[in-house]
Length: 147
Image 1 (spheres, one colour):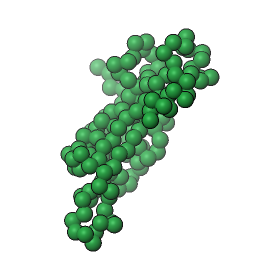
Image 2: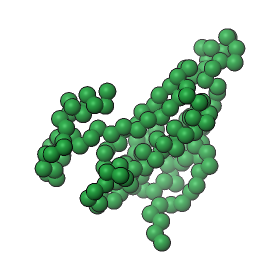
Image 3: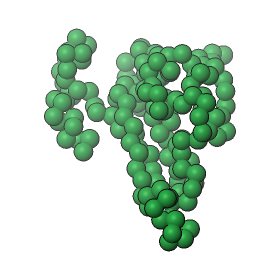
Image 4: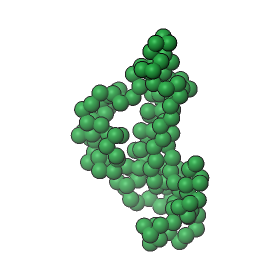
């Protein structure tokens, strides 16, 4: 049995603590997605004002938060293996997206969502050494597909 992580089962998003995350996840994820001991960064108030006077103080009626990670984080697209920590860290982004989207659905219904995106395999100096060029996108094509 291999457990490639430190096991801390957070039952609430407010309990996600960067200092308890596996080291390679800390180094791959941007800080806002792995908060230190801070208050819950997710919505805590109704999205619809309770009274007209509270309208300016509440969250917007609809909110979408997008996170992006490399395509290599796709479990179903993994045909080559390897790149363990890189793949795990990118797959972790998509797992956070899904888990927090489920949280938002339960909390906000269809008024808020979190989506995960990947740019595809983009033709760059970095990718030139390990791809034969097939199925690669130019940076412009990638941006066009993301939009």
